[in-house]
Image: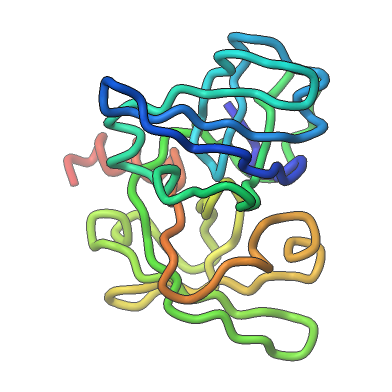
Length: 195
């Protein structure tokens, strides 16, 4: 379980294919200095298990389902990636409950600077948008964000300067895919109501 408050960004050093059709993701970040094999770390919002660690560099196995459902297969050496270690009982819950189980990907339609703030518009499939409401929470590449507007094929989010400074969002461009996870309570409510 995570909060959606990005702890740090890491740098992808490799994302190489494996004989089984998966990939091995290698990332460098200071947060791995306090991490061990078997620990869960969210990478762009996707919960991954540490396979191996050497000082500040860790490797992760990406299976076919992970590559299908996320943007992690798009990563290349030098890319910045949002990182968050799993919750501890003493952690403050400043974001919202995030499982790290990515629902789908969306596509950045526009990033529009308006003064100190940035408007982010993301195109998403209907199956995801049905769980999205104005002022509701969702996760974009591991960032807990509040929705400002929902359209028939998109949703808008206002990004504050702090979020731009501590995440990989300042490096993202229109046309790129982002990982999306809807609010856990919305999914359970829809299931209970048979929707």
